[in-house]
Length: 390
Image (cartoon, rainbow, N blue to C red; front, top):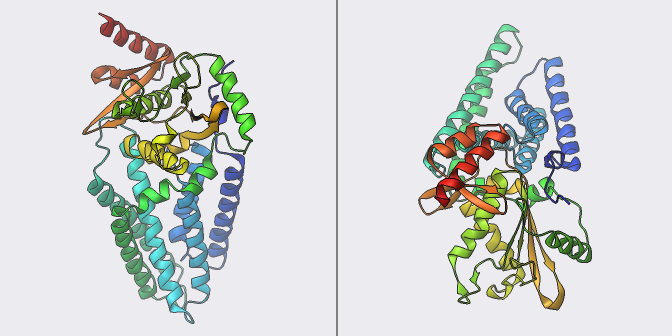
């Protein structure tokens, strides 16, 4: 039985897709109503929001991953902008607040674009925060400038009465301030929170739908009985070396290496707390103060060594087994972009070959990433294995 993900299962969950479609319909309705009444103030945010929604609905992460939290924030900001336009004279602070939020959204959108560009190429540096902020800010300001010029040109050529350029200028100035504040907050972890929030995981869970521990245990035992393969691997612990009984970072790397290999190949399942022969060893939960602390540690391992933007392709849960033991089931879907394991200042690229994870480097890595042919990719992996055996 094949326990891996099929391509169909890699799509956005239905509840999230429905939410995106409703948001897009609302956004289009706002754009149409703006044009009908001869006002384009809200296009500054409604147009970028529509673009992000279309990317999220159509691309399904093939082009970019747009966090649901960002979309929700942009839709909320758009509604605030609509309200502020109706009560601009009576409540100026609402207009200022909406302007600041617009800058926040545009800056975050710029950062997402930068992260997407960086992870589309294995040669790019992944951790250059200054590059991310400067480029993200440049993208945000470009969108802001284009929409500012479009609004001024529209009102000028339509001879709209009551139009005052200082109103749009003030909006732009506050948006710039909002973008600068966002860059500062991103340094403190705002962008990480936007990408790695619990809301995102719930909205993007691949195997959504709660089910009982008994059912999860039954399913896990059936999977384990099939034995290790290209899409299934066992690891006894997260951090503990069973030979020495001590914490060993090499154990963590072995776990992360398998996850990266699954993401880069065709997906798969990692069972932590299971010995190579399929016996239930039990994950080293006692090494942590609580199960929540163990989950947080595992989450931090993934975010710091693989990257938060790949959480949508990963889901895990702790399953209670017999004799007070527990295992962690980690489900990995195939990533649309190359995934690297950060090891100090270096980055390593792994793929699956049979029941093993193989590291690719140099020209083999470049050829593998650029080649979409399954047959050619397998040939590259075999050549690496043959070189290693020789």
